[in-house]
Length: 298
Ligand code: UTP
Image (cartoon, rainbow, N blue to C red):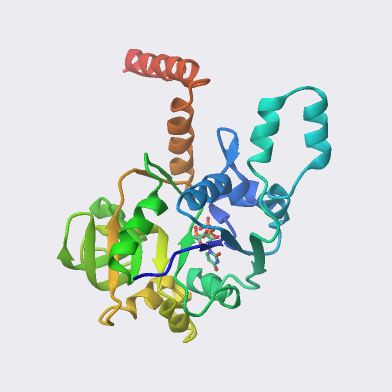
């Protein structure tokens, strides 16, 4: 029997340089898709998967993130006074229970593996944990982490979310070397972070959702420097291959947007806008107009 996954780590200490100058003063995770910051999508997904404790690994300049999850009594009082009950509900949905959220600092951006390791003292040494990268936003009928928790309860081990990516993009990802393909699940015999073009073992890439055995945290203690001179989470997971626990890739169902890149962020904005009843018609009309203008120009 696997232990229940109730804690998730959100590594948000990166510099977000691809969004400069905006990220000079706004944490990337506070940037909004329609009207909700990226971090809210990640928290909602975690909650749906049964996560009860939320650990943020932050860095200097991320104060807006802490404020975002705080209660806002003056704003709430004002909305109540004006009878804006719907907005009040929206606002309250961002509140976190006291003690459910913890912030820890990564003092130097030494890599994703190092960021996860910074949270080690907040976990029970026997407890599996989830890691969510809020840059990866996944639109899915059943939230991605929930799909993974269900699969994890059957298989145990360490599990990464996996997705087929086009050959020309695969070298930007951690890539799986597949031992056995079982459909939604693959067992893994190797993992390479950012393989040189042409050396990738498959086109099945790791994206930002993980359920990890506590042994991965021990592996991170070795502080191995990996691709790009960073301490890579992929390497610490790869050290689990060949143990009795093993490593699995999970082909989730849903659409993933790389909101750490500008193009991905814009695509997500359009997709989430089109999924909203209050915005769909107006936005679709605009998109149709744009394509008509483009067609006429050709
Ligand atoms: P990215 O590779 O997207 O880096 O990190 P970044 O700094 O956020 O953005 P760019 O590339 O400069 O635009 C992937 C995830 O890992 C976290 C980031 O916050 C992001 O959630 N991370 C990365 C850390 O928390 N610490 C690190 O040292 C590196």
